[in-house]
Image (cartoon, helix red, strand yellow):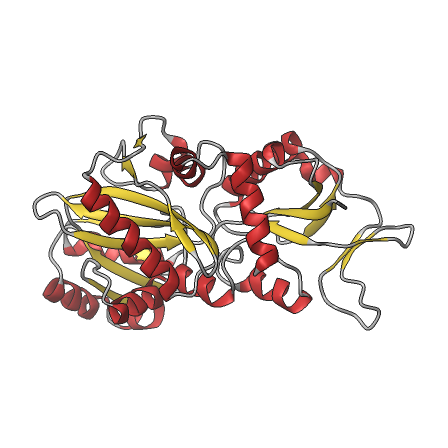
Length: 353
């Protein structure tokens, strides 16, 4: 059977650019080269795209920018000639059978790049436009989960305009509905970027200001003493959930540094919870994934409160970290699906979708 042309797309303008390079390099190393022709497109931090002749080492180190194929053009906008693909300087065209966008954060998993693929009619790994945008916007996501009756911690939210107009007024609202400690978060950001734990009004106002550096909307959540449990899901119309895993952060909470820069955070797979609780979490994960019309891939994060044992949904990550040691692949490995097989399944789901 003729091999499919798979484009691994990586980088991007978001604060998670470097994480994307790690994930993309890992996918490149593991993907079945007997089944797929691998092509690579990088997006620099300034937003410039480049079709590159490079391998995983160059991607991981960031040196892919030195390997742009001279005279190549990336054409993902359909023309009357129908030449969607990668145009080479000799006039030939590399068609794109499927794209694996290993992009994290804004402009990568928020529906924008997915909309481009839809317009170009290129199959792609991951959730579609609606699910991607809903999962990225924490405020809209919470409203959908409220409608679906999925338990979440209490929260309030604000916008840059509303907050700058009356920061003390917003603090009044937050203190009326929530108690300290609270967490301030940009509404549209991933990898725990821009999150602060706050324990006073002054810290609350400062935390909102910090979050507004990353987005124009901010959500403030009730802080609770809880275990952090994660589940991986896979599928389109039929969705499977992996075994549950547990994050044991080295810091007060699992922020960007604890995820990527510190070595002390630990993961426990499977999580140290009883089977009944794990099944409840897995069922809730599938329900939440279907509620936003998810497809392909997502990692879904939960809190289990220490005192009450109550389960709260935290968030859905529609393009989670994808290195071999990332939580999503490790959860599936523990469920019986190896890393290479997982990549293969995701590509098949993309073609099916």
